[in-house]
Amino acid sequence: MSPTSSAADVAIRLPRVEHGHPGGTPVVLLHGLSDSWRSFEPVLPYLPPAIHAIAVSLRGHGTAPRPPGGYGVIQLAGDVIGLLDELGLARAVVVGHSMGSIVAARLALDEPERVAGLVLMGAKPTFRALDALYADIAAFPDGDVDAGWVHGFQAGTLARPVPPGLLDVVVAESLRVPGRVWKALVEPTLRVDHSRRLHAIAAPTLVAWGDRDEIATRADQDELLRSIPDSRLVVYPGGGHGFHWEDPAAFAADLTAFVQGEPR
Image (cartoon, rainbow, N blue to C red; front, side, top):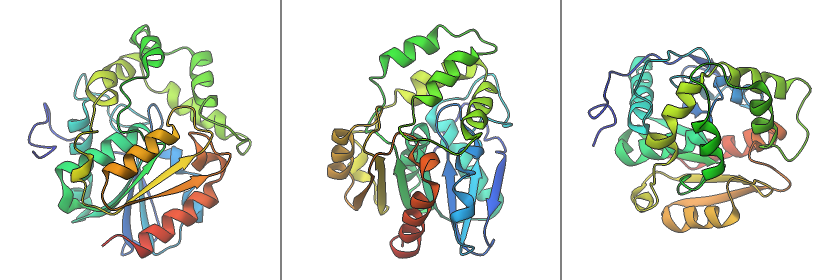
C-alpha cells in the first residue's frame, strides 16, 4: 500500500536544507521526535560533496506546516515521497533517527523502489512501550510545552558532552512544536509496530547505535539485525541516543562508507 494513497490529506511541502553536489548520491535525513532538520546540522559539514544530503523537517516540526491532522506514519512517509517527487529523485538512501527511523522503515516497506539504502539510528522494532514518556505527552497542553520538561527530555538523550550551544538549539527547536502535535504523533506513529514486517525490508540497511542509549537497547538492535535480511550494525562506544550530536564526524564517516559502498 502506498503511503500517499492512504493519506487522510495530501502531502505537504517539507522545509529542507541541502548539502553537497546536486548530482551526488541523494541521502534524505529524517529527525527524531520534536527535532527538525537542524538535528543533522552538526553532521552535514563532515559529509563529502559526492553525497547530496537533504535534511528535512517533518510536518509539525521546525518551520514545517502544522495542519490540524495527518500525523500518522503513513502521512509522514507520504510527505517524504512528495519531497522526492518535488526534487525529481527516483530513489534515495533514507536515514532516520529515533522517530525518523519509524518513518524510514515504513518507506522501505511500502515504497521499496524509492529506497536505495536504509540507515536506522537509535531505532527499535517498535517504540510502543515507552509508557512514561507517552503519559507525560498526554498531559501536555495543546499550546506551548514546558521548557524545563523539554530540556530534560533532550538532555536525557545524551551520554557524552556536545558542542557548546547545541543543546540550546535542540531545545529551542523542540519548543517550536505545540503540545497538540506531540500528542497527535503518539498513537499513529510512535506506537506503530513494524516488528512483524521488518523481514520484508529489501534495502541494504545500516543499524547505528550508541551503547549507552537508554531508549533503544542492545536487544532492540539484535532483533533488528535478525529481522532485516541485509543489515549490519555499527556501535558507538559510550554513545547515547543522540550519538550523532556527540560525535558527528564518526557518524558521518560511517554514513559515507555505507552510502558509497553498499546501497545498490
